[in-house]
Length: 216
Image (tube, rainbow, N blue to C red; front, side, top):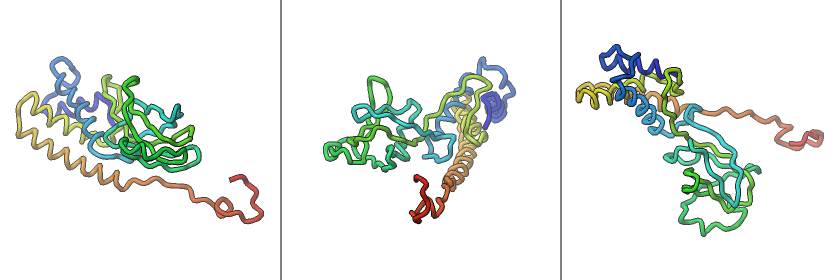
């Protein structure tokens, strides 16, 4: 993780500058830092916590809005109800094929009234627990922290775009994009190996042994 100030310094150094403490005249370079962060969030369906969120949705008339941080590029990673039923995403065009209250399916549309994406289901559930990838949040204050664990990847991308946008230097753009792409690949490889550990239930929790009276 790195602060906005640290990312400004890294990006300035990679563009052969030492004026990271001054915003005036460096608006393009600072903008490219946020462009880089957005690009990384959208480059992969990340599993690590820095790019995901969970939310409990209370259904009203079989639907509920997702938080505005929901990233529509990747859909939901998981959707379950209060009874631990797993839900399957369907094409909104097929919703007419699922009308029973025990059809554990959902579809996503856009709620123009609230400017949020919305989960719909025919199920009689009252709550849906969902996990999804999030959109990035732009940095604005020097103390703001970016949660992406590889600050070099951000700085390389921002430097590449700054060389192209501000200096029209394609050679340096290509050089730093190559460095960025390798860092991104390494980050994706780490994420692909990331797994959630689950507690293993004891025999007493899994089976009625005749003497275990705990309510499971």
